[in-house]
Length: 103
Image (cartoon, rainbow, N blue to C red; front, side):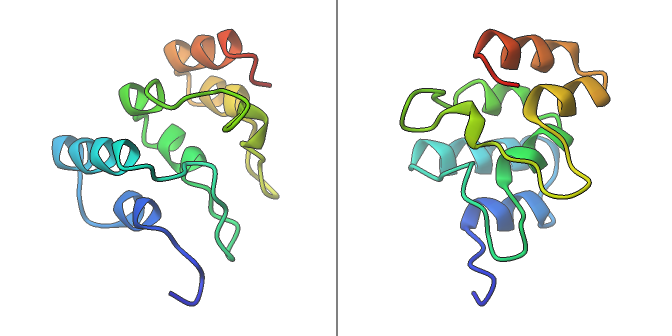
């Protein structure tokens, strides 16, 4: 589309909820969707996944040199990966990001 939004973004901001959303996100990540890809509006799927507390799906992301956690760049008014999890009181995800070396 004109904002270069990915299928992953559409899934995250669409109507799907709960288990249906988890299944869709699982499939998209398995198919190679990039959770770090920023669209023209500045939306980055990994940030939305944190907000939706998709912990299981986030933990399947490979935090390697190909997709390092420092690619999770906050836009104005947003947060770093570990700080975002902390802000939402999601200690499980905060700990996971810290273990991955994410700021």
